[in-house]
Amino acid sequence: MEVQVDTSKIISLRKSRAWSQQQLAEVASVSLRTIQRIEKSGNASQESVKSISSAFSIVPEDILVKESEKFSVVKRIKNYIAAILVLGGASLLYASFSTASPIMLKVDASSNNEQLASIQLLNEEGAESEMRINNMLKIELSTEQTPENQIRLKTKVYEFKESTGFVLVASPVLLTEFHKSAGIKFTASSGVPFEVQVTPQN
Image (cartoon, rainbow, N blue to C red; front, side):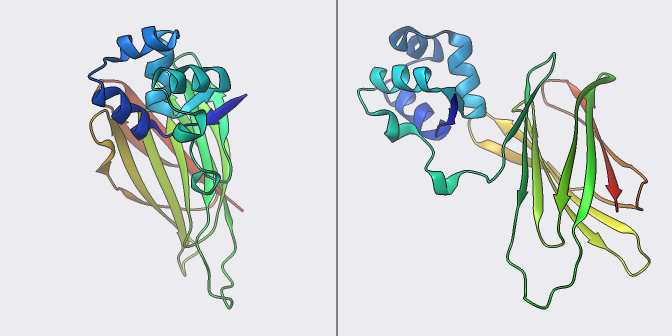
């Protein structure tokens, strides 16, 4: 079973001891790849959490993400490159008189013509749905239906930086219609190209 850990705290504890990721892996008796994955994604097995917390001489609870800080839904899809985390639907508060209907979005992500994910997110006006790709990129999506029955997609693309975390790199606004896809193309700083197709469905 995997749990969510506070990556910033792990990195801070490691750097305060002037340890490299390799050194932490050796002290915790886990692989370097495990440390790298945990520090990027925040996902860790309970065994890894115990090993890492022991290396820092703290209790496991000290590096776990508190329940109130977690996203409500976490879906994990593995592909030939890495894991894709899809965190759907962080809801915002609405006025009681709001009559906006939620819009189902079909989201297809690919890289180098290889499909990475095909998911559906239920999005309501004023709320943002979030998906992460390869733990390197984060995309936030929100919808707005126009009087002409078109769908305005507001997107924000973030790239993960080791030193600062996720940084906003683009915020395109797309206009499409029900059952017609709108595409976002971008290249990560690593040189890996990504394409995301978003199709509103009613």
